[in-house]
Image (cartoon, rainbow, N blue to C red; front, side, top):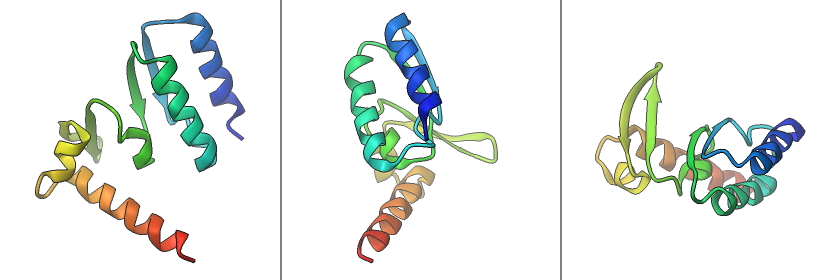
Length: 108
């Protein structure tokens, strides 16, 4: 699974455009492969503008900015750590829910 995403990313590496748009680039990939792919994206595309549509929290944690959306509308936009520390933050709540679920699943 995820062959199409990997193929497209390989094409982007060869083309060397300055802007990279990723729409659920790792949705069909297991967590271990996702981690490798994210590391590759961060190193090989370090000087690029990267716009990522993602639902996995780890995918966006090292992004410069995060736009959290709800019902198709932008709710908040800032650095991930700033949003996580903001009281009432949608992104902060999503991060806490993700890690809570992650730890409960990993303990079973």
